[in-house]
Length: 97
Image 1: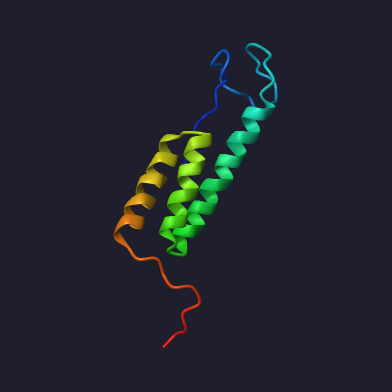
Image 2: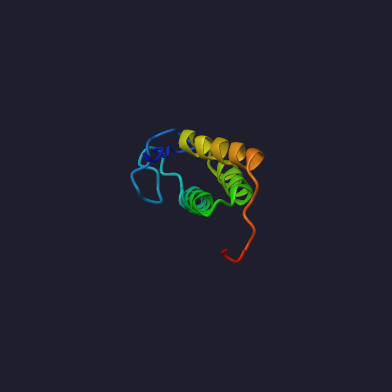
């Protein structure tokens, strides 16, 4: 998956990985923290999908999109919502037969 390039919310310059915008000098440390939190939530959502926890994956990916909207994040959210609406969550710790 290709990550969306972050841009400065002040001047729209592409970020270069530092806490200061190279275009306008704005402090972007909070923006970068929020983007990192969204990325972590998306990773947790993908893990939840792998465990067939579709409702959890939907909730996590929705929270990620709220923090930092990306096209791939929207696809993850759409998929999780479809699966959550059409499949039953597995029972936790169900004994094997």
